Image (tube, rainbow, N blue to C red):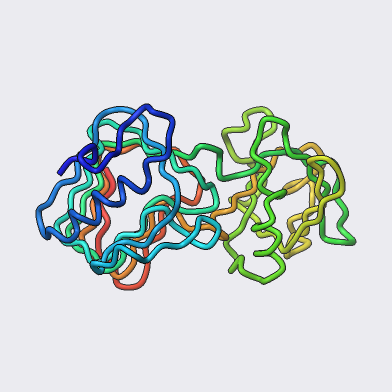
Length: 264
């Protein structure tokens, strides 16, 4: 089964999410052993939509859904990118979620986002008394903190201790700061200027020169608010092979009774 038969054409610059979803839904309905094949090229994925359970009418809007491609009750399904790049348009939603699936393979594709699902910036000052630091988002970085969905999630306590920051090495920002922990949790933030924010942490122990200090480069990750890039729940034998995953640092979530996910 080929996605082009459902109208999904690569390299057009136009969203192909609905067409790709139609192809995957048909494959789920056809049953075990069905392969969904892409042409090489770039596909933009929009409009998260729940699929599976033979229900083609269940649709959720991008700002309500946590995943672009929510696949349930698939058995023996093969999703073969054939070298294609799938670019997901809503950085607040995860890419794939597999629920009650068995023997599903996700192979030969690059998974990325149109905008980076994290914020990068620099600490301007630290205030231990208020358990906060002033943070400037870089001009070339995605400003997630300006997204009202982030504000709403903070106010409604939806972070579940999973929205976190990471302190990067000042000389080599692809590495973590050697004296800091792997991550820290944030408890809230407020806008103070153009791409300027006061960020509150949940423990004053983070605010010391060995952890968070003036001049530090910090990456804030929104994956606790949004879905993981790939989420597997209530499923067995999910395989991810020969893929390139270029997304947020919090990439995989495996929980409940899933017993095997094979990433190669």
